[in-house]
Length: 190
Length: 286
Image 1: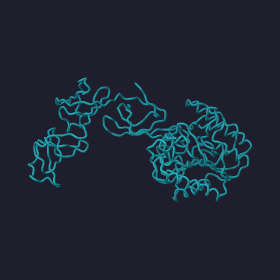
Image 2: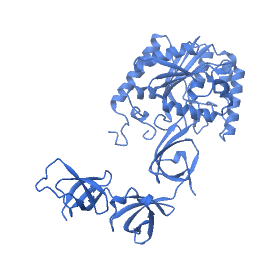
Image 3: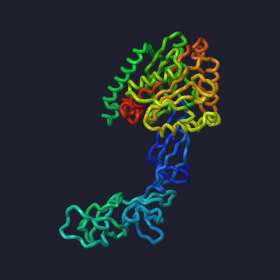
Image 4: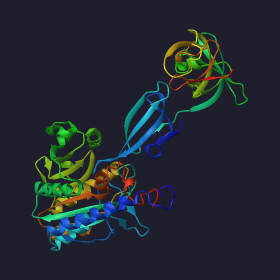
């Protein structure tokens, strides 16, 4: 397995820290006047999303992590696993656990394109596109003509996600959603 | 402008602030009758300090990591209190608060001890950054180890604690004093502590000063011990600066000296969060 020395650390580098795959966010060189040099490094744990901060002696090495991000299509769920297929022509499939899809499960639509992070070939996280279009399955009847600002109501989408929508939205409407905030953006013409 | 590779990294306003800072420093020492000197940036020998790496030229001479050795040779030759503003070079030091070439202000005061020099450092910093209060903290309290146990701690563990303590330090000006004897560098030692101090401003180290060691034999021992440490760490030995040792044998007057990182002071004055914001040509652009 390849290793990286602190002077090779840069944002985006994928490394193994305490057994978990991490992405380096920041690497700062620190050195007390007459003392040894250190690197204060911020990592994002790619499994949990948590930010870790660690200090290394300059010149120390850590192992690289075999982490790749792959464009994949969501196919189906069997209830225990969510199945994705590579869109690079290999048709290779991977099965992601509930824990791995937790952040994306509200925005999964069949044949939708997702970024799946693979560590040693196994999925560790799924990132939806920034915007998805989903159908409203249940909500209170819309108020005709009320397209102006003000007022919102709960709605359930085809994926099971519940979000706040404007009062004029009806069952069967297609909505554009920002997956980063989970917020309604607009109605789209079917 | 800074987007163009040929253009300076910092705004022209930072150059103006730098020029004003240099003028203020010279006025400060003029008023105190401290003489400006210039010594060689490229010299036959460098520091032995294992934590400092120098940059060697093709002919084997080294770019000075500080003007200390030659300024002490001037003092031994009978110079009065002196100061110097010039470039210093350290291999491999690059980051938000480090650049391999930086501007060092170093001065020596005849007859001063460490507390007297700390007062003068504070007076200068007040001129450059505006007046403020100065705390004093002993090294042992900074690293959170009782003074009596410092000897039992590994150097790298202590260095790490210092780096962490500085990162956590709130805004303000703090002199760190009473360094453990084995971190004396070129300061004199009395009992378990060295007459060495550092000034930290808003968590950034800006000055390192000593009540200077005079004894040539002790200086030689420390340099030899530095080289033992270098070998232990897999670093190349640094040949001893025999000219400095001879100057000490001739006699270094009782004095205190301090080095100040002027680029860091300028960055702090300008509210910048990195040296690159106040240097026209930091290493990646020079």
